[in-house]
Image 1 (spheres, rainbow, N blue to C red):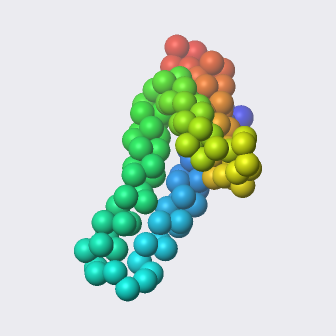
Image 2 (cartoon, one colour):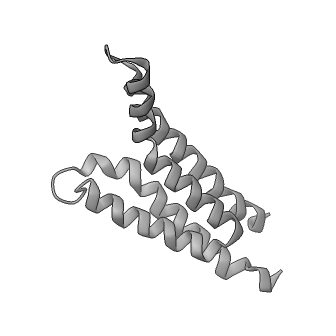
Image 3 (cartoon, rainbow, N blue to C red):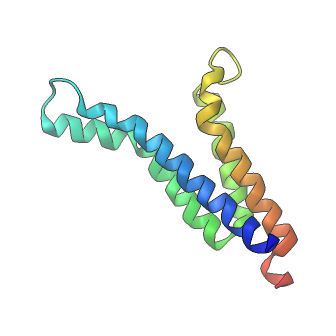
Length: 116
């Protein structure tokens, strides 16, 4: 049971974190801009979400590489959002990706394909 739990927790947690980030892009549909500008704004807001979805696909196939990419995404997010120099609230958005990266790596080393 522990093996399946450690397999699914990072995947579900990542999907929930991506949905949480996706919710922030819905504000692009407010205002008086044209529909085309609203859709373009929605797409631009979701570029990080698309990158994280791509990393999730990689992590699903190769847990070690995906876990490392999630940790790199966390580091990039801390730099981009200046999380440790005046914007600690952004950690709520990006810390889940550090946790899932570590969980993917942990699952790889405990239950990797060579150990199955």
